[in-house]
Image (cartoon, rainbow, N blue to C red; front, side, top):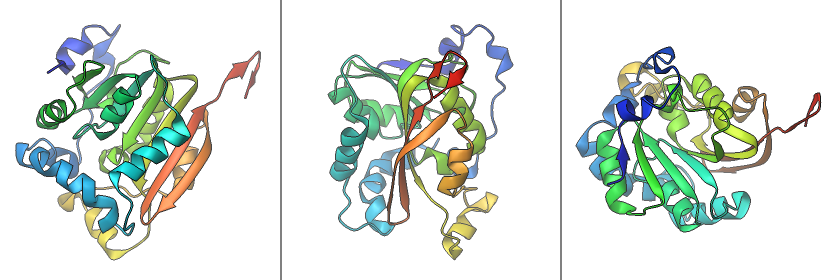
Length: 235
């Protein structure tokens, strides 16, 4: 298993003490359990169908991602909240070099068994406070972690910082529907989940522009590109 623990990774940062450990939501804490990690791939393969998108399989999701983002061999990608390693595997098979981050060692262990690729570096890290250098990646993928993270605005700001100019950010998340189930799951004791509106997500990324957006059932897929500065003008 090609695993870099957070403590080891932090030694490469110029000032790791400047990044305090973020608080965790109940959903994030549940992901630390080996039982949750063991069953996550089963849930992920069925989640969109259960969320109102019958027939939208992981294969179709991977095809959508590859068609819109077109990851290239040699590119550096960050997979945030990799869980069972779905996007990390898709990227590695496209020839990209992948840093797959998750705050759960149990999830990373499962993912590494499912996606045994030398192109993937598994990192035990909460990306809300990554401490990684600016503009480190050609692309970033986030599969549902935006719903679970304790501070989604902080996470989005960090992802924008980590993207190089012209780089891509791919988000898959459950958007706000104002339904009773979402209201229950938003309660701190029942998960503390966040269900953002796509317009709110775009406002948290002032240095990016949304170039693609697709709603499938309750799921939202967004592709953003990091703006490129030319002279004194940001395009």
